[in-house]
Image (cartoon, rainbow, N blue to C red):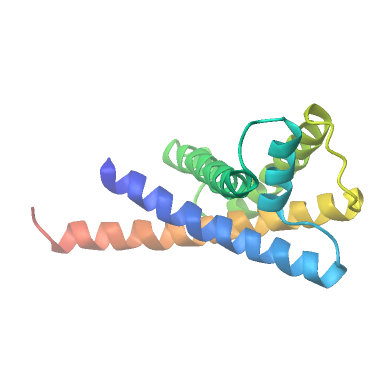
Length: 159
């Protein structure tokens, strides 16, 4: 159980980092603010929390990675319950579903906080969709690799 939690934490960190790298690259390329942790910290600011600006930035990053962990937990359940196989096609399906969830979540966040950053929303949502596909592909690949390693270790190591 503890190994599974550690496995999921490491996979979620890597997948969220890959997604974030993509968003930062798209942000730079299109000269737009497409950076989820930054947008989360701005949304926190709009909620009138008594957090310092530095704390808002930290929480923006933490929330981003916690959400990534929750997505990976969801993927894990899908795979363990054999709802989808661990495959490139399931990675794509999970990425599409995650992208749609991500877009609707951001629409709700922007509405709830009355935060209307000066961004190209259509461009943001398009890049967010593809960022989630990158997230899912990374998570699926790492899950598959780590699962294979665990099977091999159990086959060759006795406790």
